[in-house]
Image (cartoon, rainbow, N blue to C red):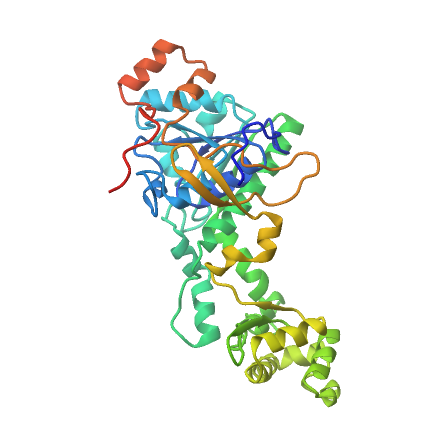
Length: 415
């Protein structure tokens, strides 16, 4: 059993303060990573809270499972940014931060009086990171964007159809949000490093469409990498119909026979040494040119033995193979158990929780679970006091609904 450790070392980002105006997954995932690494993340929420708080399962209203993971290692302050007093409080918080990150459209930030010019006037050294759908210089600027839309717009849904012949479909993870969230975290750190060296802040765009297009087309630009093109787009190996877990006689396995050494070993495993000189199988270039045939050949063979038989044979030959997990069975994976990947922690209002550990091992400045995910507005008074508000000013903000704080340790349990 592991508890959240408020006394843990600061992590490699100790001393970096981030004002987090993001919601749902993309921005909160970026700031979750930064918080795990020790940054002081101040999550600004409207009075109703981040929408993701309402997505179950949950034990108490506003404390949904995904929100508990994404908002750990953060402090929550409620500010009604549509009120002038809320905007002013946000700017006063920004004055003490290294970065402000948001994932609404820039036009919405401008309507709130929180565009880059306004925030930079409060803090010229601040890094102002915008994560939104489309770059501001293109015709899609200002259009709404969500994970599903961006997966479709960047060809991911169509790649499923191209490979399988079935209807287009989305990857069953928030792939766009999390991939672009990683890009946003990198962009924020890069710009903060520049600001620390130069004393100058800057505005940074991290558009979802362009970021995920880079991810997709890095694999699939194909023959259009050359001008004029020398072939179609697409990476044939990734699009081969049999590039999927192989069916064995009693289940499925993930197998990748990739380089020449592995193929030579595989020919020995299956008792087909003559294939070493085959025009289809004899070299990496030949296999790549006939990748559909190669995958089909392996798929037919895999069905002739059980999963355990293949595991024993392929592991003995040092050929990459792995059992096929479900999200349920992954919970009991022996490797993840050994490295402590799933941490059980005690949350002050939600009881015992299981959460993925911070990623990476830092010899001097370890990442840690320092704070449980906050209740809506749990740190409102604390953070306003840090921004220089006195008791009377805070009381006024509470009275007029500009901010709020929880009135009890928990809301009533859900029926």
